Length: 312
Ligand code: GTP
Ligand code: MG
Image (cartoon, rainbow, N blue to C red; front, top):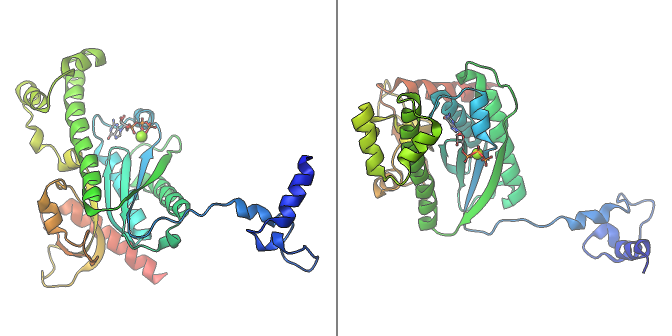
């Protein structure tokens, strides 16, 4: 049958679209093209599962070189990532935890979230674009050189049915930081300080275990790997907390903010301390040590921003 004739029949008898099924009259608001809506697929996410959205920078090895990131870790660049992660969590209240490392961020939505009616494409595209625009907006707060081109991030949604699956997912990402960071720290020490070529450094590290790399760092460069900044070794965990600053009375209720912490989340201790993540979600209290000036400043900025938004 002729294609046009087929198409006419389909349009007239399509039963998934109310405009297409009714005989078109001039008084109706729907056009004869309306039936194309029926091609859109329902992408509602299953109920009662952990929704994890992970975004990842596109070709960040090139982006890092173009912007002269320090090797292997650029503290300021990581802070731009964290600022973007915080902005996403400020916007989407049902995210209970964010986890960032290198050029990636994972966001965990409450199992029972009804954000955007749990529509996958909406959730994924909003989070990815919010992260990207916030990354660009936060850039100049941390970086000296201007952005020379627009960064972009891909995004994916992964669903985890059990708490154990979710913990294993986060442990997997944190183990990844450990493996990569230990390797990269040793690699760049060999290249930048011992003058090896990239290839020679690669050969030197090929087939080595973690203990060998720890030993190499200690013997040749006097570095105890475990004393390197925790953000590099553990990544950044973002948690929603009621924050009490060092100068405040610890009995105070505290105001809600997103707190970046750099702890081990593989062991049980983390989950015992932050029971709200897997339990009924009520942000726990977080007392910020007055010794941690950096965190105090970051949180003060967040609270200031909240106050400004409230005033508008
Ligand atoms: P695609 O994700 O496949 O597009 O490639 P990619 O180049 O982004 O690689 P991948 O996501 O696997 O790894 C991230 C890369 O970002 C690292 O390999 C580094 O090259 C770079 N990167 C991330 N953080 C830093 C940093 O703090 N300093 C430096 N120098 N590079 C970083
Ligand atoms: Mg990447």
